[in-house]
Structures are given as structure tokens and as C-alpha cells.
Image (cartoon, rainbow, N blue to C red; front, side):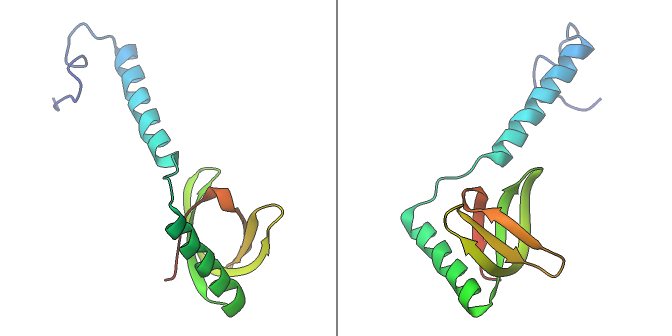
Length: 111
């Protein structure tokens, strides 16, 4: 029998439904931690702005990490456009053009 992380699970009085519920709560907390956005300082935001401009004006490929509908995603491509009113930019890859909301970005970097 493998060692249990929680002392309550080791108890013989723990019902299987409760064990399942505790496991689901632990998984939910881990998923929530993945979806949490870190706080970025002004220096980091300025660096991202320069990276976006370099890609848009110079056609340089960049790596974008953002929160997609199913969790964190990473895409490599070139910025093909920026919409400041909607706070979005467009990243062209070999397969498609992705529309990425600026508030969903978790990281930008040059490869």
C-alpha cells in the first residue's frame, strides 16, 4: 500500500467518497494555481512591449505563453498585427493566425 499524503486518508474511518472528494479538491487547487497570473512589474511590461514591436516591425519570431481556454498555451510565431482598441495582437504561425488578448499573456520572449 502506498504512503498517503494526508493523515485523514490513512484513517480506516474514511469513506471512499470522502477520499475521492479530497483528491478532487487537491487537483482543483493545483489547476487553480496553474491558471493564476503572476504580477508583472513595469520593467517586464516594457520588455514585452519592445519584443512585440520588434516582431511586428522586423518580422522576428517570438514565443508567447498565454492562458488559453483549456489552460496555459505556448505558441511561436510572428506578430502580424495589433489592435490597441481591443487590446489584442495577432500571431501568425505556419498553421494559422492566433488572436491573443494582451491580458491573457503570461510571457513573451525571443527564441
